[in-house]
Amino acid sequence: PEQGCLSIVVLGASGDLAKKKTFPALFNLYRQGFLQPSEVHIFGYARTKISDDDLRDRIRRHLVHGKEASSSHSEDVEKFLQLIKYVSGSYDDEGGFRLLDKEISEHEVAKNSQEGSSRRLFYLALPPSVYPSVCKMIRYHCMNRSDLGGWTRVVVEKPFGKDLSSAEELSLQLGELFNEKQIYRIDHYLGKELVQNLLVLRFANRLFLPLWNRDNIDNIQIVFREDFGTEGRGGYFDEYGIIRDIIQNHLLQVLCLVAMEKPVSLKPEYIRDEKVKVLKSVLPVEDDEVVLGQYEGYRDDPTVADNSNTPTFATVILRIHNERWEGVPFILKAGKALNSRKAEVRVQFKDVPGDIFKSKKLGRNELVIRLQPSEAMYTKLTVKKPGLEMSTIQSEMDLSYGMRYQGVTIPEAYERLILDTIRGDQQHFVRRDELKVAWEIFTPLLHRIDDGKLKPLPYKPGSRGPVEADELLAKAGYVQTHGY
Ligand code: BG6
Image (cartoon, helix red, strand yellow):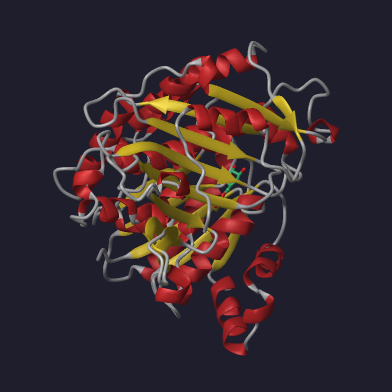
């Protein structure tokens, strides 16, 4: 492990992302001993003029949860909060960043009396519009200058642009300031336990290896549902919509891991090479393989345009033009304000040829990987109905993590990804060329929606979304399972 002082700077420290995700993730890492007070200092940076204690008060609320409020937990919270210092300044002001650099350097001098190297991690919990100016400020005023090694790394999160050209523009701007090894583009789905399990499931199990192709798989669904609407984020959401918010990034990343070829080894670059390859094989999206929806009441939000054409629901079929997947629809579906909150991958196998049990009507084999809630993997199987008769029913082989791994706490995605950043492991981060191909896939479709050529269908909040989406699913070959 790398030695030396570690400074973590959270920019946008008083914003929502920082309070709800970044600081709680840092706290969890601290509790597990990954952030040692002898070497770590955390800086919050934002425009608001507040004191260290004001910031600590704002963060504290998000660290103390009802059931965990044991005295040892509260003690840890207080110790953790003491590691945080606040610096206020604007995002394009040299003065603020010089001050930040001074604070970091003082901390480095104090902690690094012997070992030497210094590590600086900048976490941009900020809207992307300020990425270029903030990155410039970091590059010119806050880089690690230790002669004894160390590094400077910058963590950024989507939206990386709105389409191919704006994303490329942003990549270019950041690329002039930092090299690819210094930029960590977070897609928090890559930090989820069952997303990380996908490569293990596929490449460490002989059971699935020979089946994972067009000869055996009929269709694959990657689904994200939320049972709440845009909730105070209407302004942001209306500009982006569900495809940019969920499908082009989170679901497409999952698709990569489900569909890519086996990497040469687990080296991050080899894995990311395979992801890029499979993305390059995705064909342009056809309009008749898209269903868009917008929930009723969405436009009542005062921050949403009255005539908004923004989809809050979308089902999009992607086709991968390669030897393994030709003819297998990848159905990506995401929606807000639906009937449940769930994210899962459904791999549906083809019917058994020459079926002697006449069990076809029961449904097909299906492997379901539930990313959340309640992580699980289960396989739908046809079995003999227990009893004297020879009849068949649909049943399941079930690996529910809550049951099988009782007592194991599954880490939060952000926790894992921040630790990866500290360790310098870029496997679970999006590479620049990967981002570019992801935009190439969706940009033409997004432009057709932005131009009003494709319109979302209304659906009732709390429903399954537009019925047309179910019809598209059936057309793509998905067979609903019955009778269990
Ligand atoms: C974010 C989206 O990236 O992911 C949100 O911007 C969405 O709209 C969230 O609610 C979902 O994340 P999770 O981890 O709760 O599935």
